[in-house]
Length: 139
View 1 (cartoon, rainbow, N blue to C red):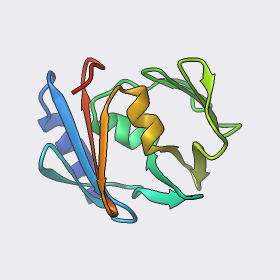
View 2: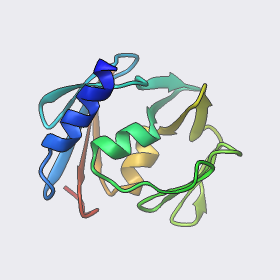
View 3: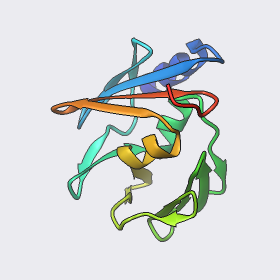
View 4: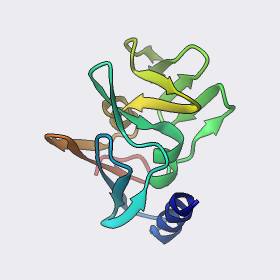
């Protein structure tokens, strides 16, 4: 439950305008949002050679609206079908492996998520920084 409290606190502490920066390391629950530490309930993973992020949790941390039902989700230009583990970006089908379910957690490729949000994604070995603007522009 401490992780949930940290998640809620980090989200509440973020400004409503401007950019949001999420820094994370593969297989680590500890991350940073705008420099403030948070605990992810579902850590980023390497699945099928892709860096994957928990969709719902990351959308919340970035202050991005995630619309739809439990099976059909929309985040900016990204549409996800959780039943089929498939996604489309601006109507274009994404390659197999872009979406994966691990237990009850839906993961999406970090690169696809960055593209959907017009965000910047940089990496240094196993540590990544995703920077997105709340209004969807390029940071």
